Amino acid sequence: MPSEARSPRLAVLIDADNASAKIVDGLFEEIAKIGEASVRRIYGDFSSPRSRPWADTLARYAIVPQQQFAYTSGKNASDITLVIDAMDLLHSGRFDGFCLVSSDSDFTRLAARIREQGIDVFGFGEQKTPESFRQACRRFIYTENLRGGASSSKDAAPAARSLMPIRAATEIIEKVIGQIESEDGWVELGVVGTQLTNLVSDFDPRTYGCRKLSDLVRKSGAFEIGEQAKGGSMRIRVKTAEGSQPKPKAPRGHRDAAAKA
Image (cartoon, rainbow, N blue to C red):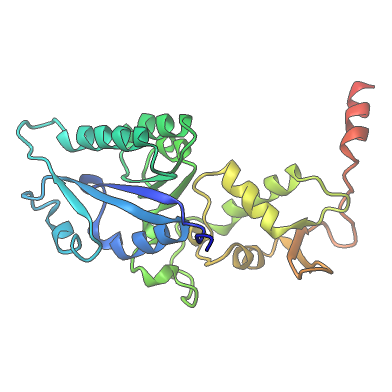
């Protein structure tokens, strides 16, 4: 019998010094949407009060602790060990992706190096995480959106407090729509979502207090919403001034010819 398609194998590496144990439920729910967490390791000095809250969660999620004693003040042996393990796992060729859980920009080069090898990197960190690390990842998820775990489930209500105003998301979505080929301004929401992920690694509707992209589009009030005749897929376009119509985009060939004229 043919074997069932296997979920992408993921290596989950957690920096205990720069991640809160309060996110653990939401973290692994989010990772399960991406693939199978085949390796689960956490790095820190678990004799320290700072890392101790993680100790209660390790068995529940089968996370393997990598104890690193802080022998010298100011030197982070945990970060070095995490990087060494990540490179060993990368060169094993057994993984389809890496999940780096940290808000530390020191892992920017590690994320970039893994992606150079053609392997996806998914970052998880607080909103304060430097842009360099966020953009080095294929996707970056704010851990503020993961607290409570159940908030990411299908039937849960949107977060009570958004991390950013909806108008900030509206500007990004409008930019993406402007990059997509369309004769009449209408574009499929799924195509917009894919392009958003490619353009902005940390784009997430939950950051704006919405569970899904469709909820965010509706809540913004900045877009017209329609349905495709086939498949029922949602389409959207930017709202224009009352009584005017969006200016159709000329086919690419016509625009190229105009540019050369």
